[in-house]
Length: 288
Image (cartoon, rainbow, N blue to C red; front, side, top):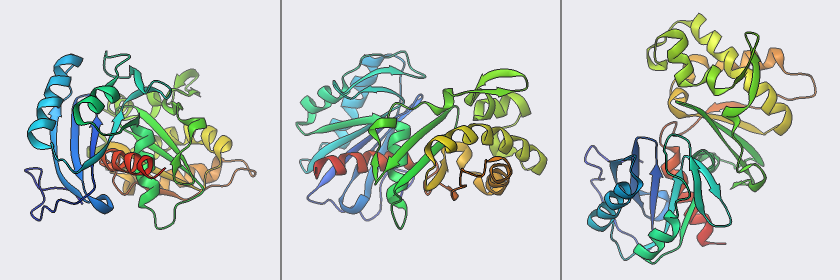
């Protein structure tokens, strides 16, 4: 359930257990307060400024002004980069020049509650796994946006073996060149090749070409992982109804006999999965 245009629900109901969720994006950061049962009470957006210390001050001001609730029990953070799971630092971010940032310790000192952090695609996959009626044994979440990311969820938790996976950087042969998957099938690649954003593409032939480029990466990944279900999210996931059947057709025709084609479905929250996953990340950690 998403808030209104002002960032609030009309029926705000504070609960005894609250989780603060922070989704750090390349250009904007979403902060949301959740109550019991993943109920989003309110949310706010701020710009993700290139200067980390300026961003930190803006985030601090926002939390102190709008989210300083004594009932907050934990914080869940998603970051678009590499996480050191020993130090809990973000060692490198894809579209930001920040590196080796210790946001976990900073927010712990600010709010005096446990703070948990993970990669944004992992966190989105976590949310999508828990949005299904039955959590599958092994779920592959792939987000198609400016780039391509993935989250591999096993038994409802981020699989630590694949936590550092960067599927968008898989090297694939395409048009006689060895290229990264996200240089072939991401939103940035679509805009470059077709001079249109995904939202504006309605031509079936164009979507068939795009589905073929998406399938190139899935051929490799499905053979290795053989997931029970694949969830497609991100900005391009919003338009899954235009190409989902084309993608399944491509995979059905090209996968070898020993690799089963799992159900491929649209994300429940194509562009909001990360913030819901931040809640799930912290909620899971609290009950361990």
